[in-house]
Image 1 (cartoon, rainbow, N blue to C red):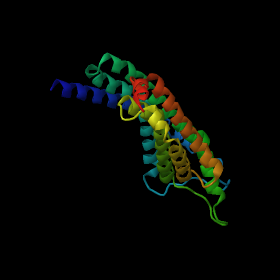
Image 2: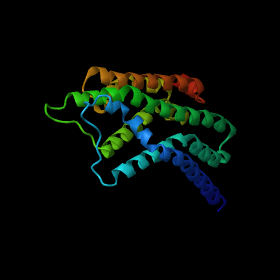
Image 3: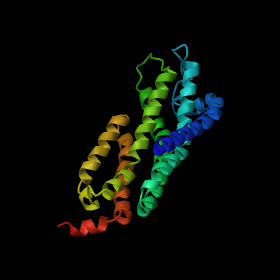
Image 4: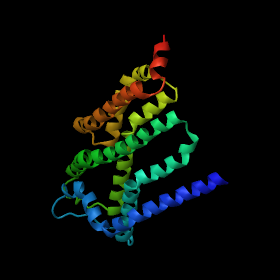
Length: 239
């Protein structure tokens, strides 16, 4: 019962943190959506604009955007509450490792979102608009645009968590850095495959995604070999 009460307290604090950030975000929701749609608007013809096909879309889309931004901004607070709930059940050595993992995973998620907004979005939207058939006016619905952008943010945010995932795999003892390093050719092919699926079908766009993902893979191997407990010992025991 004590654990359930503690969990309820942490959930309430998480909800309050998100709610406090949501209020100012909702107040500035219109300029926030204008900023979010910038990579698309800069490539659209002068006579085109975003449209709202749903009756409630002009209100619900900015509110949904504000909620997502509030969740992203309050992510450190959310992770802190989760950490305070699980910390009493961890050993001292585990606590020393979990804190850097939480910080690094948060920063990498933000980095993935920034990479998507400033690097991928201009290329993707520029390509899609340039291939529109003659006589077709590009006028994107704001609901569809927000859904697409949020999916891309989530995809790149999760993709940039690759070093943390590799560290956890090595820390848990499922594999050693040497074993994971043997999958380099497959990781490189998978990175370009992800670039082919998430970006326009040109070599430059695919490379802009594949190269950072592969570099994150190498960084994860390097960090796991240095800091994962027992990683070097298990590597030395390998034939």
